[in-house]
Length: 192
Length: 288
Image (tube, rainbow over all chains, first blue to last red; front, side):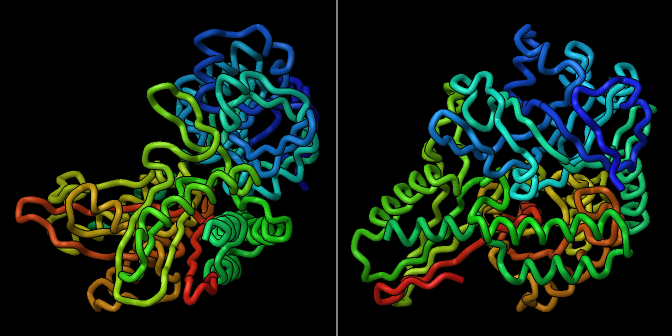
């Protein structure tokens, strides 16, 4: 059974999670990808502190429908996380973000950031856009829509039972590193 | 013709081809019962079903629209007319949320909002002797495009020389480098030879082949089979989280090379394998 995580979440709850744990997340989180991470680090906008503190960042550039004055996510799977490697650990520390959700995993700097700040990396299934959009119940707000465009804007969303797997925990374990090491060894054996 | 192209885009974005669904299902059966790999492959099928039923994009990254169009010689102003129809259909498909606004001008960093811009959509025209028009469309997302790679042989690090053994080492390496980041299990389209630019065009054209087909060239067929077998021994698995299914297929073509050059170009297509074909014959439209 997946562990249920309610947002905002405390550092203590996050520290209990281990790589391999399945979770379901309920509460308000924020999408951010390339332009947003650059913005969060270079300009450090104060307007995001309240929503990010104890919350999670979802690496996602959604397809969004506008119905009257409200927005609805139509398709919203994760995007590749590694592009945010230069920024993520600092974002976690500065805004007290408790998890980032994406796909493909992240590198040593983020793994160290998870350990230092008490955060985890959650893996969602890439390409699962229709299923994951179903668990996004409401668009609460949006930042930088005009400046960044739909995929890159910072969307504030309310999710219910959003499914993910812990693949990097706050204790230094990364499933991505384990699989990279094992597959590289297998490659060397094939080329002998 | 604009409506026909709009429907082609809608189907490509919202429906996975049957051969792909069958392969996902077969691979799911082969993964260890109760494993994360098996669960992920199952959710992929669930997503395909839901996207089709709701007519929404399979993946939010609706990708680069890559068209390969073959048109009959007797069609007048063919490229102009078809280009016009494709552009209008692309704008309409974006408004209907079959496509995400996905085209950014690097000079201004602005998203054009309608998927049109320099090089967007990506169009490849070819006049042929047949009486009908064939349009093939691939929606190729950025995640898998980013893990595409081009090797120049010989490659000292891989111990890869200028022969098919060297090519094999490149293909295996491409899968290792990609890990799960191209949304594994993927399909590798490969071109041996060519110049750098055509290498990528030709490697992507390989991605229009059906998953179950056999390469007509015996040596290439053997190389494809060996690469699939060996890559699936690497343990990378669905989404790079471990398992027996790392690729669904490897499709290899060749183009002649210069004596001085030996490129091996690999294009990675994600599991959300959005390819669709349309035939227009005597004003009747058929999709496959």
